[in-house]
Length: 473
Image 1 (cartoon, rainbow, N blue to C red):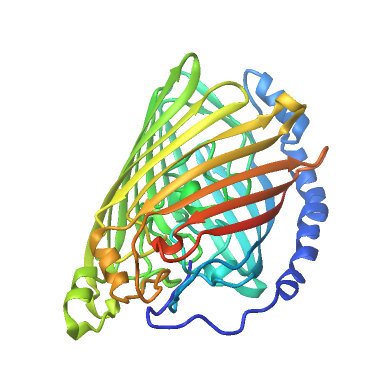
Image 2: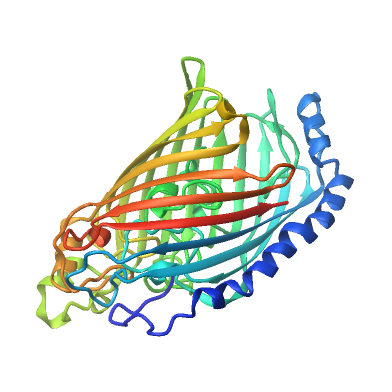
């Protein structure tokens, strides 16, 4: 996600596939092969190797880590062919043959400061490009890429936050060592306060079957609630705080986060009193036919220096330039997120989302309503227990003012064909994640069919094929 002047056109020169991939593969090999040796040594001193982790799970009092190191590297290549496109605009998805590659690499560093107090630091690098330069779709195809595409990977701070947990006594639960999680135990009844640089999606809208584009579905509208315009900079991170109250059968979370200074921009708006996003989520845990499930109900309220679709469309003085209507204003929305285990190998999910759609899309993507769902199956039935395959379907829509603005020729930060024959954007995605034996490396072929790309019935359909290589330590 990246800053874009709504009147600007797509850069004409885009480095070729080989140029993007050249700096990526050596970096991936370093992360996947060299760094794990150091991480294993560090984690072994903390009693958090794979063997000790399994011992921890079986013990009454699990070992408590003081610090740990984890990491990941992901390379995604996607390609598409020509499709029907009688016209296009500055932000249209290109209707020509195209292949693009992106990469990310992340270190996850955690340290226990004192009892209940934990500090996490995640430096990250990203590089390469997404197909279409990440324009022309509401439900974009690669969840691990942003609109800051550059051929050479650039470093930045993804997360730097502190969490303090206060337990209320009673039953305890184990915490398994992992990225941004220190092994130990904690009270089931507890309150946790977190503050710093983070992603709002780290704490809200979670789902066991569709939430991480590096190992699960890659499409934006499957990995998250596309209608939640969650506060974030162009890379998906921001500053804020979260209060999480947890009980055995439910949890209640509240968060407040800073908004970007411009639509889908990298700088954060310093006027926090006027520009911030608030979200509250109730999570209910239950069992159906003795199988676990969760329901999450989410409400959000955003304030930012947003423009108004109706004003930009109806008043000729603005010349269809929504940036000229910007002032501090609000957006509200809600969502329902369900996950249900069907058996030990099969699970399903469903998301519903809505926003009022009066003011411009600001931080995530251009979508005002969404329905998505799907299933994920482990490979146990064919003796590949560490493999997974998934299939999911999305139907996204725009509000009336939003579609009228685009139909008149207006440009958003992601959409703008010059005109619009509106239709819901429909996406079907399926993938197979193959795990390399005795290695934390996965290879994932992925296929996405997109009907009416950019909510435009005059364009498409579009077929995008992808291949993802992901490694962890």
